[in-house]
Length: 108
Image (cartoon, rainbow, N blue to C red; front, side, top):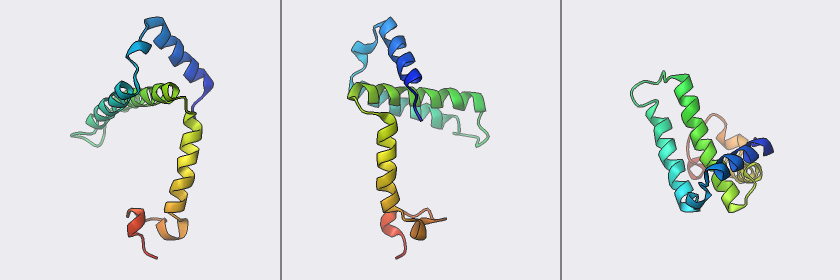
């Protein structure tokens, strides 16, 4: 999960460059999608993507997620854990194990 050291390093990096002025929630959300597309591009023509390139693009996605969480004043670790609890309720192990269907399509 996210560490305070990562959050502080990102805050410092942004502050040194005075980029916070550009980091509206809307711009950060757009950046997440753009970087996610670049991550997907690594696999566009070959499932054997370059591991280093994938790691760099994944880092960009995660960086913007950290920045957006910080801007919104939410704890990234906590919102992931909270969402996991919601998802556990939607996908009980006895109905979802080994299945890829959406929760409303799982057998009873």
